Image 1 (cartoon, protein in one colour):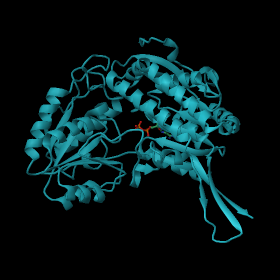
Image 2 (cartoon, rainbow, N blue to C red):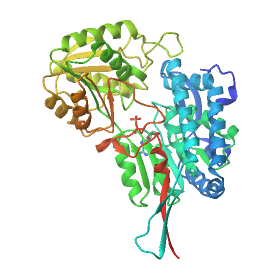
Image 3 (cartoon, protein in one colour):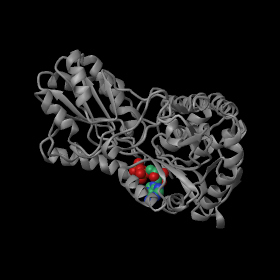
Image 4 (cartoon, rainbow, N blue to C red):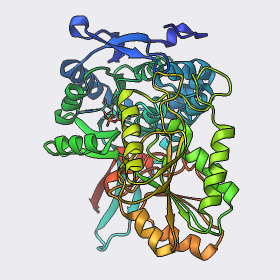
Length: 485
Ligand code: ADP
């Protein structure tokens, strides 16, 4: 299957190592498929430990010259890369929709969001300030400087094939670090297209490499190689735990952005129409495949039926399932068969324990990986869907009566990424915002992500923050200089 591009050279199908476009040793490849059609889009190199090691060694060799450039010069490269992303946004979106499935408009939105991290961190590069500390004794002067941590490695997921890369590469390059990226197997083409533009923007050879292929082999090399000082991972909690343990042997600095199980609470004083709009945006964006998607809707008993009816009407009127390239489509396919099976399992489990399917509930007539947007009512804590992230277009509606009760239910999970709630009572807004054990809380909104705000979780949703001025801290180390005078 071909992807129609204005600039066909953006469709790179070799990996990018040390400034060269390369095949795997032995020329092994793997297939990239369109989840909306099942057809093969491209073959990309199936690389492993040896190629990863070369990329890491090249990064280490390139580090000195890159960190020696003034921040302003690194910022100029990031700005150029940002400009190139925007200039090529249509092609980048077309590549993303082809391999990931999200609607074109959403893909284009992601390209802009992804590019914004390059712009933002280029600007922040100039503001990696240190400190002077008043000395407790007269004979010393104390100074703190911040330095790039060193060679970084990044492992990224398929749900945001561009933004999860720039959110790591942007601050790494800004701080003066080289980085080796392993994109998800499902979406390497977006990553490679970004590398094409990085090369054009003047990112020096070795400062950015993109290695495609075997996750276990590449991950094992990234986590065991002592030259790698930092690993940044976005993906499932299970893989995050594994990578964290693998990094223990060489004590790497870590950023982990893992799973969520976001509660979305609708209090009885909420603006219901606003809550419905927020629910649609938070739940069904990317067909429910984001780690900050609302996963559990807690609706106050007084407004439960009204909210359920309004949400159902909105789903019926506003959501259209189809290929992402078709105009008006809001719901693309899920990424693969495993994703469909998980959604089906959660629905079947809920229904077997008494939940009712208000709308949807099954695979879509379009076939392939398409699933109907679904609402479940009468959902309880005993159901699987209350505990696990569904990562699909299913809105389960739980009923609650009291503030303390709902906060307890919302916090009753090992995850702590995003939470949302709707209320107009200012006292309740503060109390609930403070009581929710989450890294991010959306209050009267279902959309919270942008490049200037700190994205990240607590508990088993991860470590560290991405985006914002905090995001660059993950790529620097503090050095203390103590001067006797
Ligand atoms: P998902 O379930 O959303 O695919 P994963 O955590 O499996 O989430 O995938 C996120 C990223 O982690 C992908 O790039 C994937 O290839 C990678 N990955 C999966 N397993 C491993 C592993 N054992 N070691 C290193 N990377 C892995």
